[in-house]
Image (cartoon, rainbow, N blue to C red; front, side, top):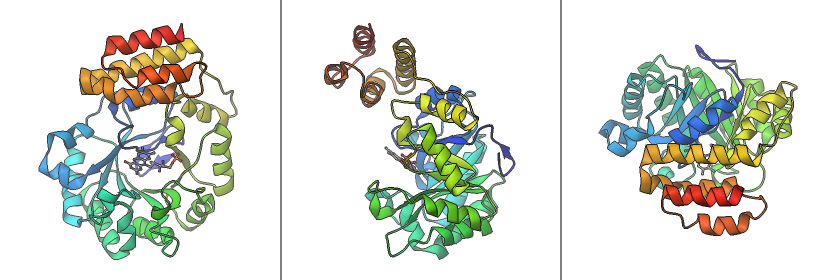
Length: 317
Ligand SMILES: Cc1cc2nc3c(=O)[nH]c(=O)nc-3n(C[C@H](O)[C@H](O)[C@H](O)COP(=O)(O)O)c2cc1C
């Protein structure tokens, strides 16, 4: 499929997830065939201030392509400047976050809060469009709350502003992750827009992905929580959608992948942060496995790489 002029090989996308889809995780996920992966949301204002922490979020690697950088903010001029900075870093696409319900973001009027102000949302997207020739996408929720379900209005504004695709996680911001995502809204957007629609929310199995595509006719599916501890899901979805087989990784394959992920994490974040930050991944990777509870108790305390590798070796042996 195409998003603007960008050719994308598979219609299975890795969702942006703060604290998770960092460079190490994206490098791990790439060989499983995700069509495109995204950075976590990055503050447009932080980018302009050129803070060290913010600039780390846009670091990439030749194997980490095609890459979408996700920005959040609500001031047209700042977003336009941020887009220009991102463009200089040679990325493939820029995604605009209009779906984040987290307090520290919405209290600034950004993320999902911007959906409450369609006029400003339109102005931001128009400025972003004028600032770059890169493909632009926007990621939205169904609206702010049950009384303000204006996803279609915002999606049309994105299309009219010259954006190249819309991703939708069809829950309102005040729903967080509760109840079920309303996939019918993905279908409504698909019927009403000319640009590609990317469906997101509650895909946990290859069958879920096929069902979303059948029910909504969306152009691509985007997977978030389903890949935690299970990046193989991407390969299984790609295969299933193409009529192929799915597989369960062996224990040896799991161990090798976890160690590689850990090594990448330490290389990127340094020994201390890299290992500490990896604890959550260890918990996800071993969820539901035999003897996992005891392993997880110890995994929650590891503090250096040698200890982590020994613990995994003992467990997988
Ligand atoms: C820990 C976590 C962090 C997230 N961070 C972001 C983010 O930075 N930007 C964004 O657009 N969505 C973010 N999301 C939302 C996901 O991209 C996705 O829309 C949501 O999880 C629903 O898809 P799923 O059911 O496949 O998980 C995050 C979700 C989780 C669980």
